[in-house]
Length: 370
Image 1 (cartoon, rainbow, N blue to C red):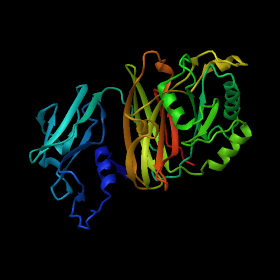
Image 2: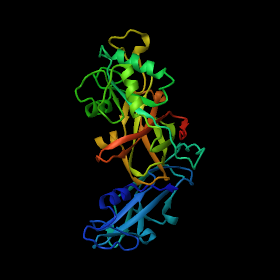
Image 3: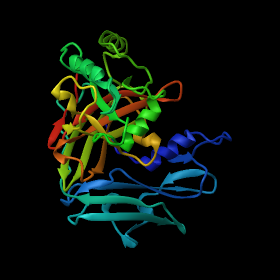
């Protein structure tokens, strides 16, 4: 079934767990939490300005006994500070712009949520097999590199050979993280952040797999690692549609859940065809760099690398996630694309990558079934 994503609500439920610490019985429709007040959440932060696409709100009230109830239309909703009435708490508009919403109830005012109304969010491709939850697994290979690294062309040669091997080239997606020096045209602050997280010794070239610090330098070892860690089925499937409007990418993602768990979703922006002279080059193509990490969306290190929380999702659920990225003027917008990554909390409490995909502007990616 489809699930509406109310992110603030998910944070709340994750924190409280579902039963009160003092053993109280949870009343019907209530969940125990700690702070009295109103919580407003929305399932979409971006909608199309067509009068049909809509953002749906949910309003919760926590009483002084620590229980939270869905109060729906009992609350008063405000848009940009003005009272507004919405049928079934659904907001749509023909007018482009940024809209801020709050909810008032029992003399409490909620947090602020924002909805941007835009033109150009592309629709997801139709699911070719809605009842299928057997997804192909794609690993993530990150090449930590730089154009003044004289040994890095060796890694470029290795990855080129791997990409030409039909037994392996559909088992992973690759990212080039240029963090070696600022004079590199493919260098980015996002790459530095990623390098600090996984390239612990600052050694170049360095190849990491998924969200790990493992590295290899021989193609036989890389293939062996993939053989050991690639899974027959992924815990999530991913579909995507990406559009480019006025130097902004709109990324529309469908996440289909095969295995229940606590999930996050990350979006990274990559760029192809960056010309930057490579030290140690032995072929002309060494000077053209692809899949270069430009940005990781999010407001802190955790969300940028590991993603925004989707919360606890059950097997069989499908969720929709939409975000946007403003491209830097120095980037070639036509060469940029979005990488989407989902991760799940493991038994160790850490988030581990479960699947990833890449989608370019004007294109769509369908769920990959086995």
